[in-house]
Length: 300
Image 1 (cartoon, helix red, strand yellow):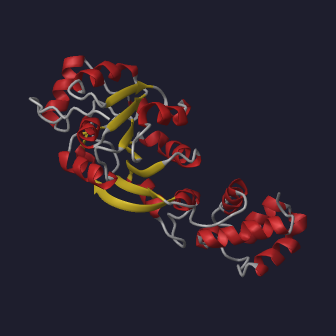
Image 2 (cartoon, one colour):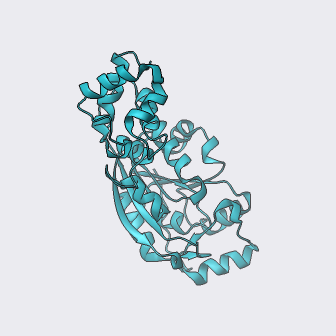
């Protein structure tokens, strides 16, 4: 595994001056539709990279590198870096600013349409572990996170900058308004940890919302044991179909109102009050419920 951590003559990319210089040199204009907000705060970059736990024997996958501020730091810390960028206008910029590093591959692609398993084989074979480290475009945060989790990729950590409210939902515990299907999906696969809150002034241009860095440490095995993952998440989604409704009402609509009596018996057998709402159930309680519904043949 080769790396080239050449001493840089130029200042770090993650500064207002250098970012402006790069944008001006290449005549780049921001596209709101792609959620482009480039990080210009070196201290935040340090926190992101530290949370990822990288080393020369490990790999890093970045999504949406922008002008390469985070990519540059990843190249200095990881043995191999792959950066997936959807905006073709940024590809020549990235190749220019990352020229000092021979351990970075810039891939022009849409991460939601990329064969990630193939990318792993091509870019990360022989590494001791790979983490996803990224400043994610806010408009596609959840689809990207879910794709990374559901593909069962050999990931160590996912360390991402996201909208503050989304980070809070990922880390939320049962009983609060932030706890929902995203919380359960993330916590089923990972242990979330809020790394830091990031003010809008850390970006160029500044977004209208505050952001947060969250670390999702991949669990060696899911948080709860279920016989059918797809069924488990169908039950979770059904329980949150209408947040204000009770489990009894949401699940009756799911299994069929004519089977409400059988549903009540399953809930009672699981020790779950039918008057509770989905947002109060733990991952373990959802596992009990999914298995109970399947055993009673209320769902397949």
